[in-house]
Length: 301
Image 1 (cartoon, rainbow, N blue to C red):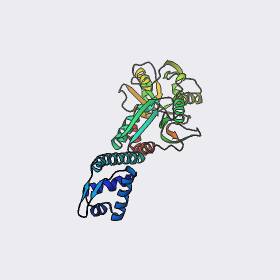
Image 2: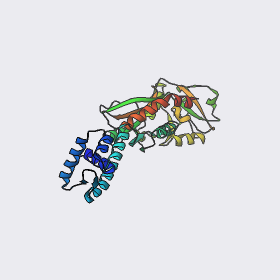
Image 3: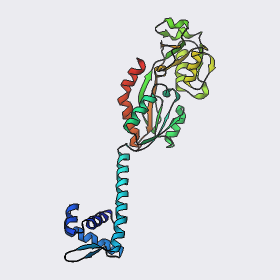
Image 4: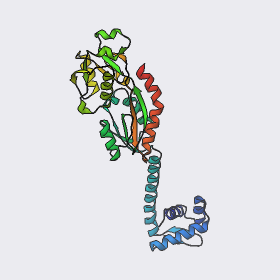
């Protein structure tokens, strides 16, 4: 049995006229008659009582009509759902990101994406860079936002944002009198940094910047997350360095100053499996590309 046969049968059952059913289905009457006959043969029961002037449903036909309508409705639902998934408007997106992306970047991006694609179910995981690449290759993540560059051969990537170092200082700190700082001015400062065990790409940038300035940071307190480090800055425990987007919405008791450094800028990149078939990944990246200029402007303002 074919879906086409069900559609022809329903048309005849509702019109009770082979000619009108053929016109409704945009086929010749002979095609309708042939398919109904074949359907009756496959089922082993007559579906219509035919006379020279009348067409009526048999009891088997009435039962068949009820079930055919259900099958056709389910078929339409399946086609509609698959079409939406294929267009990236329905489905699932498992998304991973590093902790610092929560501050300033993800809320407006996810909000804009969900407004455009409300039928995509998203899951979120905060993971370090290595955990994200492992999860991508193991198909536990569809898309990752992680420190770049990304060189894994099975992954594709594109840069989303990048940032030079920004110093976060207590509001009463002497260095707040400068509009910008050099790394050398921080040589004697108490640093608040993430622990090496967190495998933070941003920590690597900070250590490299300090080394290029001829010193190792004097770490007085470690914390796993940037918002915790900023709380410690606010409490006067020391200073920390952040990417610019983390400064968005931070406490007025913290002063931010750009830092001139020889270190490479810190970047966050989207990464996904090479040849991935989840169109929701492409739609999320497109949304990020549209939002990126506005996002950068609002963060740096």
